[in-house]
Length: 467
Image (spheres, rainbow, N blue to C red):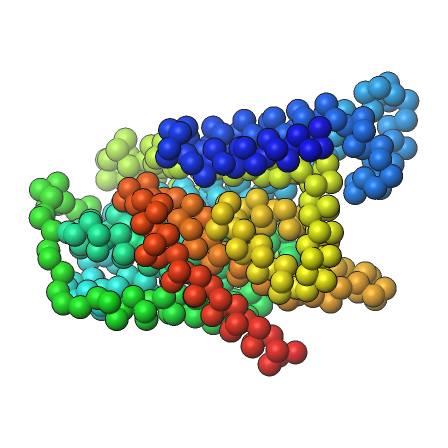
């Protein structure tokens, strides 16, 4: 069953990567994969768990001692897997999922009130090169404050209002993917992978922003500068959609929702730094306040039925949250069974435990499969070095804010841009603009790879200078 789990995992990921070809939503595949991996683990548990090299041997022994006589001997392993290991992993995954749900709801409220139009209305240039720089810069900033998935959806939707030619629009969309992933990499709330590392205390807000900002911006500027040389002239203005000419919501309400929504998201890392409040509690609290205020305003205006947050929730991208649930569950099964420990050993042996070799490899792999399971896997493969472990000779690069975890955040975030299926931002743009995998690989992938390598070089130079 140990080998079967690897085979099923690969098949599941192939189905997720080819979602648009097989016409099966990746959320459905991920949920089936997550459940089936645990089923396979249970079937093979009698040979996996008692093994001498089982990576969770300590937890297994403690569970046996604590529950001796409570469960029949033949049910002990099953109860260990489901009442101890799966509950533990579900708790960790739930922190990320509830944070995402809260953040996506706040963004949906802003979108419902047309708040992002305040930003898009400022873009009036028709110069192709200038527009490329403006869109990339806005995407980079918005992705850091919101998240790369939501930012990509907003910015790619904006393209339809600004660019008429499909081929040119795909070029802009490709650069938006790169900018969104770069912007999400240096912010603790900008990407699911950095959220996972941040929530679990592998990185801290101040240090990840300080050490990853310049590598991230380099990873965007390099492809941006190259693309800029290929764009000349003025844009053809697209035909106006009559629906867009209808009166917009009240300007004051739009402004309030935009600034309060962004402020709510920014407050989360501040609350964590000052009050040590877990991010998922911070986002839930800020969402509750935002919900309360908008409900009061709309009840006063008499349009609560059309603009309530409860109605907004129906438009939240729940399939994406369920996709992450399935993926994290599948990775948890691999971690529990010991596959990730084995991969860690293979990477250590292959790269002679070189931080940069391991981190860069994970980044490249994140362009082939989703970066979420790779980061979740790395967190399962390698232990966070505690002060006690450090005093006993533990690896320095794996302490909190150590070189490995910062490099992992950068590589997993920006490496996903190399292929269009390598990140949530790429998959979203692919769906919205119907971008072909082969076209992206031919026109954008090499640019994203150059940016990825340039940013990694910048990261190495910074760490060398500050060492």
